[in-house]
Length: 216
Ligand SMILES: CCCCC/C=C\C/C=C\C/C=C/C/C=C\CCCC(=O)SCCNC(=O)CCNC(=O)[C@H](O)C(C)(C)COP(=O)(O)OP(=O)(O)OC[C@H]1O[C@@H](n2cnc3c(N)ncnc32)[C@H](O)[C@@H]1OP(=O)(O)O
Image (cartoon, rainbow, N blue to C red; front, top):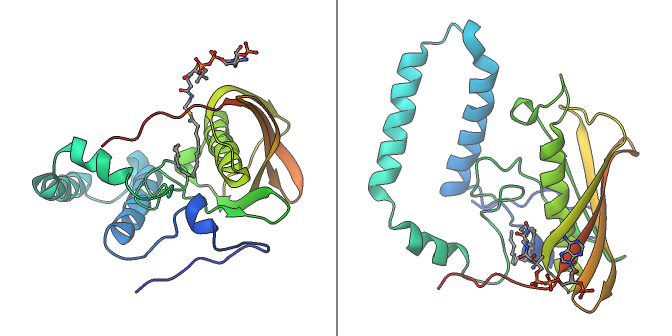
């Protein structure tokens, strides 16, 4: 069964090029279960009454099973980069990546992109708040996808972050980005993470129009 996530206002079909839509089948549901495990393990801590030796044995059995059925990593890299632009594997939006929150992004008709995400314990920095490096990772990606949405992409050369107020865990974060200017190979892009309309982290990026070749 395939179930599409809620769409944000202004979203168009090009969303499928910007950020992968979870299919809720096969690897996607296994990855969603793994996200639950990552979060539950961190919740468990030293005081859990769960039998952690048995938990470790079960998890290792699952990893052994996957390893037995996986092909060479070089083939997997080619597979990941086949098709047009959909990044199902990236660590921010990737439906196949258990460390991705995941964030779902939508392109908007005004040229910006945006999405919402709620982060839990795996992303904690200061008590009850999001790690600053995690915010930087989210914004780097959102700026990169903003460039893809605008039609001129590049690699991050410089990323400047301003942390205005602590970014809370367990609350809905809105993340937006927009390409501001292109001059030759230089691309300037901006983005912000907000809560209840108040900016927590803002970013300015300089991207250079250059692509790393896809594995073949
Ligand atoms: C994750 C997937 C990405 C691919 C996706 C593909 C399809 C998907 C479609 C949709 C989804 C898209 C999403 C993409 C999402 C996220 C993207 C994530 C972005 C990244 O995660 S990406 C990894 C981190 N990134 C690096 O790993 C870069 C390492 N680095 C280099 O590879 C080089 O360093 C490079 C290429 C930056 C430049 O090298 P270069 O040789 O091409 O150019 P050069 O050095 O000549 O600079 C030319 C002019 O830029 C000025 N300049 C350069 N650097 C500057 C700096 N730092 N500050 C100020 N000015 C700077 C120079 O001063 C000169 O200026 P001028 O012309 O005026 O003299």
